[in-house]
Image (cartoon, rainbow, N blue to C red; front, top):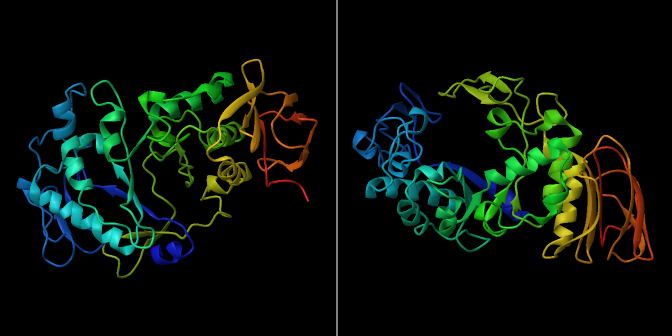
Length: 379
């Protein structure tokens, strides 16, 4: 899979869990490895690597004081056995794991629970990663960090980009409330510059535990996602999920137990035509906006119109124009634009839009969006 994607210019990212292993109990891993919470006798299936109790800690208790940095980084998150990432043997195994993936052609990692790994330990691991074959350069990393006063987002920017949960909360809430006009001025949000921030409207955790906006909110959710893709701040991540029917712990659609698989159930192949799979990334308000974002890359945002709290339009340099109506009524938009005159396809919706004498006159439906760019003219 990695090789095929690389041949087509698609970079594969791995969600790397390197802070911890399992919670209490015992079981069998997907490759048949027997484990208990602090004993993992055969990490790579070759007998050369293992974790035992001395590779964990130094704190074997669950985090209680989230304002104590040492406790947050050395104790157990949600009861999961916390690897001692300052231990050279642990670092060797983590580097081996990540480099084996890099050598396969994996081009990047989302590093899970980075906040719970001391910054110096993270630096030791990142500095030892190989160059990515084919694409070149070291792998691109972005770190899951719930930034706060104890451990800010910026603690991890020396080692890659950082997930900006404050952006998610503010932008999702603003669209949910229909109060979006101030969002055009987003800059250095949560003390993260645009180059440092990874932004999103929801992810696999917030969708379940902090559901300000999700696919269940339908048009307003996709409107917020389109805005994220139109705005220059941050590197956007688009959600693609399955229906979990209100059960926060529910896994993806499953084939059930399969012969020869020691860990039990296997996930079904993704089928976006099935109601079990949501596939937010396939919605035209997402796919069209990805084309828009690529077309306007590197351009500045210039606001062109606003009406009340819920309606705003802006240019992206001379390459693009986008307008958003986060209200329950139509918006009769009249705005200037730097786009050349012509007839453009609205890549985030239906129909064409005419630019004449440097102006746009158009009607946006409730929860509607218009997105136009040079190169997206109607034939």
